[in-house]
Length: 247
Image (tube, helix red, strand yellow):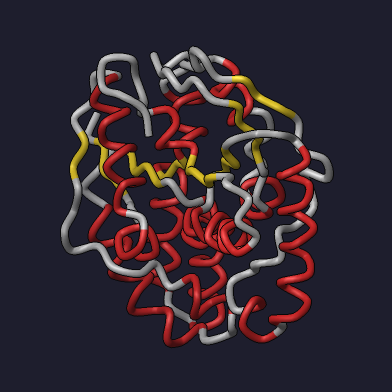
């Protein structure tokens, strides 16, 4: 099985440790992971703001770069959702039949990390060790877009040493929403402050999620509040081990 990492431009630029954690985790589970250096932005920002035609070259490039691989794994539900759901819509809006075919072929081979671990590899105990108190925020794209359900919870509960605490109002948006945070900054911060308050109230040391963009938003608020609470992507927690240390 030829596995490729779709790291996403956000992670590549700001959170490279998340991509490294995905590779380290999958290699520990016995898989060789390729990193196609030609990958670029999937076009999510363009699609979300209505620039469908401008997103076409990015969508075409994504399908070309990742078409040789049997499986593509990504640590970003929002970008996975863009490829699975938005590429067909872009193709329909622009009349691009070639992209439409490529989108149909690409979707079934692309997985968010927790989907790949639980559904494809059929594993929840990945041999992780993380001796900390953690609370989990289900991001909107993972919850309502990909419907990952309890997969992340199952993976976290199997981590040795980890104590998982429930997050009040867990299914409420964190307020980021991509360009929403820029266009509606005051509302975005207010929503994020509620999420940060709930997270602090759990007494957890770490707030975990599947989207680093959402963790950036809430993490920034927690940092300004000097809460002492860290934010970490699920991949970084799962990649931790007694032998290799923790994130």
